[in-house]
Length: 217
Image (cartoon, rainbow, N blue to C red):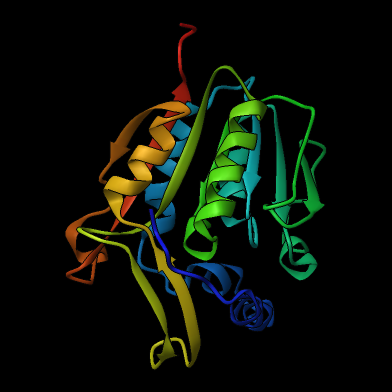
């Protein structure tokens, strides 16, 4: 189990700065490198016209906005109200301003998205969020978790980023550890979601984990 700690003040400062970006895609994806389309293709393959979608840590809603025409409803949740101002103004799309570590809903969802969020959670918050997602997932539904992972071990970054022009702080959980945590609650299929050119670092790699409910014992 990771012993790493995250400074939530640093993370909050980083994301407050990102809310000032006028381009919604760059604000939350950092660069327009094709990742968004790969994300959309994966989640759309799991959606149906009757799907009720929950997007946790939705940011500027770029992904869920692309998905909205193909599903029954979308609820996008994010801590920062300025991000949610970019949400589509349609009857099928609703938003909730809340920290994902505190969000709860009695509603069940057919597709739950947690895209690029785990990197900013402590291990404790990660585990508790997985438990709540298991409770909110409808029978036969899918829970998609995607983030950058440490290939062999967990990595914590806490330094000034020349590329982003600001201090960057994040945790990249070890792939095997994240897989084991999710497997305690779900049946999990890891997906090597991006082509090699998007995985730019030797010690980290992007993975998506497609999770479904475990059958009753």
